[in-house]
Image 1 (spheres, helix red, strand yellow):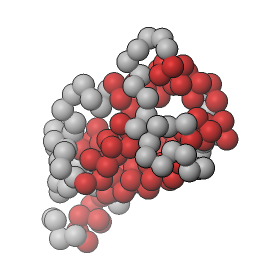
Image 2 (cartoon, helix red, strand yellow; image 1 turned 180 degrees about the vertical axis):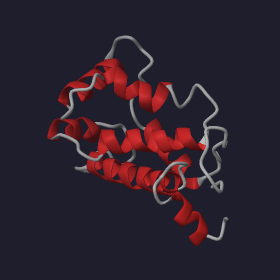
Image 3 (cartoon, helix red, strand yellow; image 1 turned 90 degrees about the vertical axis):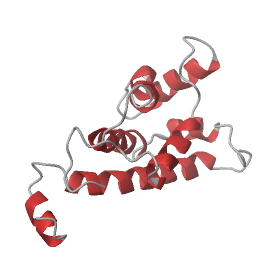
Length: 150
């Protein structure tokens, strides 16, 4: 984690939490097809949400955008924020769709709840230190002094 967070700080792709976040995302259906069961899953997930975002909005922020560029620390913070927005407050219908994920142990009831809880916990671990070090954060200077980085 760099001393301060800027748009130019490249993300450490060996960060175990970032790698785990990508592992969790990789368990979601591939959004690439414009039709078929994978596309239908994303659209159903979007329609079932508390905020009624489209399936393409979800998949764009989770899959398309983060996999098409070199991530910066700011991008990691943003990706974690999207994961928190998308999965911290799921509807029962969305949870049922997550229960359909084809993962080891999927026959066990509640795999979607385990997946969602892991996603939120992992995203939170990525988000908090990056938000705390974000330039312009009200506590940024005090936090840096506390860590002895001034």
